[in-house]
Every structure is written in structure tokens, then in C-alpha cells.
Image (cartoon, rainbow, N blue to C red; front, side, top):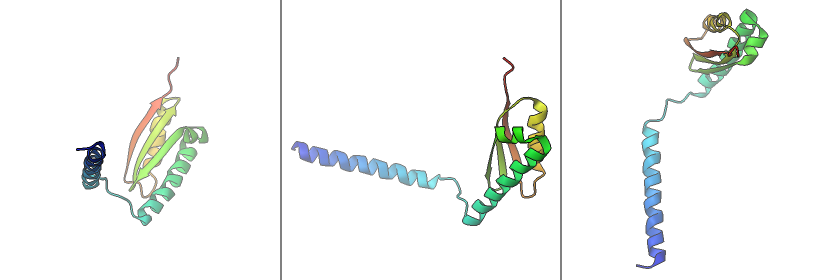
Length: 111
């Protein structure tokens, strides 16, 4: 068998492996949002950011990341103290449409 034939077989095997991996990934892909859910989550993000700014301050709201998927809020970022972290989570929880809040807010180190 010549080099060209071996190369063609290798490319076919590689393509088959890539396709098999892609199909396997499709079966385990997370549930996607429809356009309405995406829009709802985007509007909810703005409301949560606003609630945090109102309750614990614009500085804290600016330091936090707010990610929402189907009404589940994920908070992350760094704040100065535990009261601010708890206040941000409470502010997010009381926004209408929020199903739950998961906080990954960290305290800034004092060093």
C-alpha cells in the first residue's frame, strides 16, 4: 500500500473518530434555552444587578458577576466582607422570577 493510500485511510479513521465523539457529545449536551427563556434570563440579569446595587451598593454590584440560566442565578466575584456577600445573595433571591441563587462569592484577602 502506498503512502497516499495510508494517508487516506488515516484521514478516514480520524474523521470517523471525530464524528463519533461529536455524536456522543450531542446525546449528553445540556438542555438549551429557547428564545423566550434567553430573553427572560437577560431581563432577569438586569433586575438582579439592579437589586444588588440598591441593597448593597453599586460598588458591590460592579464587582460581581451575575449569570442566569432558566431562572437559576449564579453569583461570583470578590467582595470586602461576608455581610456584602450575604446581602447580594438575599437581594438576588427576592427578585421576581428567580428560582434559586447559587453563590460563589469570595472574600478579598486582607493581606
